[in-house]
Image (cartoon, rainbow, N blue to C red; front, side, top):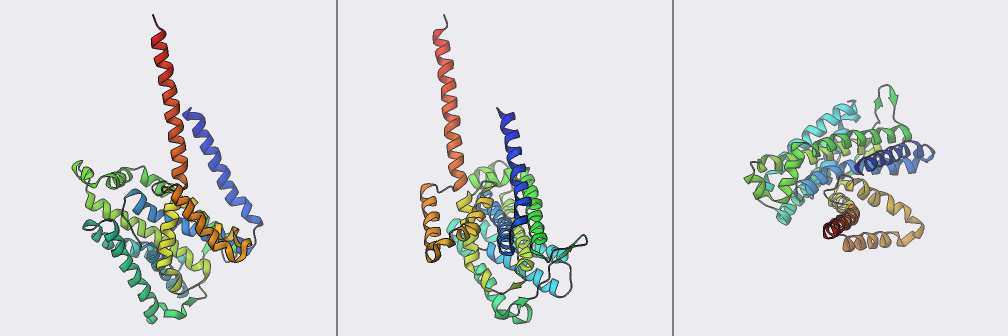
Length: 332
């Protein structure tokens, strides 16, 4: 059974990837912008999913790291630096800041840690708004250029969408490898029971810091793409609401599931657009749909699927036991 299911998953993955490549060729400028935004927000949500879903550390600072990456890209590229250099600076800066921010997680947990990261998010937003000499404050940074990749310009919407999609693919492969590595298993052990993980010889201190640092670095990657996507940034998009939106993406999609951020970002970015035909009611319908989902399944959309598959496996195992038991009873 595992063989056919494996090939079915591979075929489904190929179909989805082909669809993401081919179907947007017929989209207009706004449709490509929305899809690019979905890819960027998925990268940021994947970073938060690593911190929250796999390592079990609550963070309300992911939006701040997206802002750090966006401002790093905007400042450097408007001064003539290539985007790849801005990406390196953003990743290193967010990794270091995330590592330092992880230290409170060594002493406080759960909602106390959420308050610490909330304070950092507020501090970062105030720095974006008030440090005019660096960020231009409320006036923002405009005319952010889009990069040239291997001689191909991405100033048009479709090539830049492919850049965002390719970046999402690279991040997905890297994170897939990380989760299935010994580091990923250590993150899961840290989430399930830190005391037991420590008793098994896992350096919980180091892995807690690594979870924050890597998740924050992915926020920086998303921010580096966000700046040339919008080609104008100011402090407003990077306030607390972005961190809450990313948290919602992870929870709605399914925290701790690899594809949870993909679905969560799809709902957060695309569902409001699909509901715009309701005019003034679309936000109410969107909020009601999210609340209903979380009431029905606190583990998110993939949690529903996982529960259904678990029940199916349980029924199949029960049926096999029943058959085996009847065979033993019928034997002479």
